[in-house]
Length: 139
Image 1 (cartoon, rainbow, N blue to C red):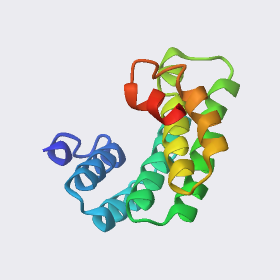
Image 2: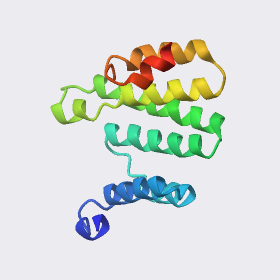
Image 3: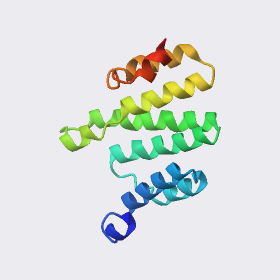
């Protein structure tokens, strides 16, 4: 349905949405193919979410080292949002650095690195302070 709506207008974003649907269904390889096809990374906020989605997929596949590489790319791209001049409200609203930091804390926990996981969890608590699971991870 998203592909029909976006016909000719914003095709890469429709592919991005379809890849999220495939990820939710558990079709990880198909989600990777769709993300690679939608690799229109002209906007900074979209490129950070592109890398965040790729790292989540590789995390689910159990490839934690590859997932960590995509986490670092996503964090570096999300930090570029604040360096743009002039700052736009639309770009600031696309900043997902706290979400990416939260995902990074989960990766550190799985890899057996509790101290970096706590640091990332504390940074993520700035935006996700109402999630009990986050506080359990810090504890």
